[in-house]
Length: 240
Image (cartoon, rainbow, N blue to C red):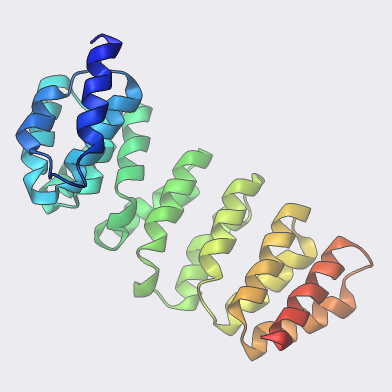
């Protein structure tokens, strides 16, 4: 499709707040020949139409195959049949399809078999681990602190800071004592970036246990950035 025609479609999409978009029209204008940004925008609009959008998303998948934007749209519509289709894509041989399906299943974490979450958390790929943590975020309310911590141990030990920090940020939503104690250990022995995230997490938790941990860290950490961060987080506790 030529740029002028795409410009017209962008204009129509931009008016969706004033006039609801017709899912049939969205399905009709979608084409693999569109620019990737426009395909993503069209599929996002379809996904946001929930039960009205899913039949058109599925039709497009049948016509064009599991394109990345269509997979993401299936996750966004949040329909049980879409979830089941996404789960079926985890058996695909194409790693890109599998990874995109895992990302699309993120908000379905509570309804995804735990075995899939566990497999993602220990997979060598950092992208798979991040997808697993996203699913775990929506599953965490079903787990005790010890169960959640056990599932996070592999990502916490990841040598890639992005993965380990994502696990820390998930844990900071909980206020159990064992969570604060684990974050304390990370503050002492993790990389600089990971330790900073753990100290910030302790500050966010803001319980008597986390405050005690910060106090101990402010005394035991050697002079330097980590100790200063512990003191900063501790000071904010008492100001609040």
